[in-house]
Length: 259
Ligand SMILES: O=C[C@H](O)COP(=O)(O)O
Image 1 (cartoon, rainbow, N blue to C red):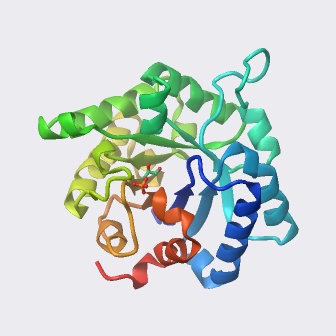
Image 2 (cartoon, helix red, strand yellow):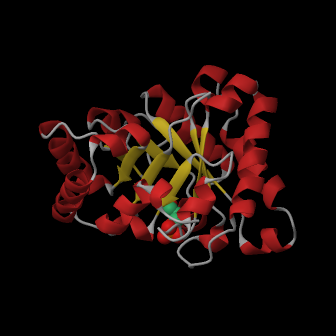
């Protein structure tokens, strides 16, 4: 099955709504139809930017898609500070990142909550970008595959095959996030391959073949080609480098970069 590569820019807590408009405009100006035919390009701005991004994308009929960095496990009600899947769907979001290591670390999100958020996303027709990945100690102890697969198992509890087939996974080794320490292409392939094999066990080969698996962690234009060349890597979840439109455009043209 043909899987269209996805390059997604996770802006984290950067860029206000005015900066978001300028950034998306620069991306739209630089990227052309050929780029969008080859790769799906997504940005994941802070909540406060989403309405502005929606207006720009709709108004100019841009092929850039967008999403949020998190959502509430609940659909509405007295949950101060939370944002529901329904609200994100209304803003035209395609994707929502779930289980990013920064949410797991700073907000104590565990597999049960990640699972509840995955199911909330599907209730509102949002596509989760489910993040898994090990910390340095786990990697050094050789537990990286088991750790990432266990996070996948936890996140997909009670998620039926027809929903799972549309999920996007992101393998992000925590030790490689924002550190400049990029995993080798072989490191990325080892875990991404194991995640796909696990999907085949949990569901079937068809689901496993349909799911896009991204690598994330210090991806830059000078290292993306080798990572993208791996058979089970279908894209990148990019943090820091996505804040620079010129660099992000280069990442979207990964096939022109040297490995
Ligand atoms: O979601 C993106 C990842 O956390 C990677 O961030 P980074 O590219 O700044 O290392």
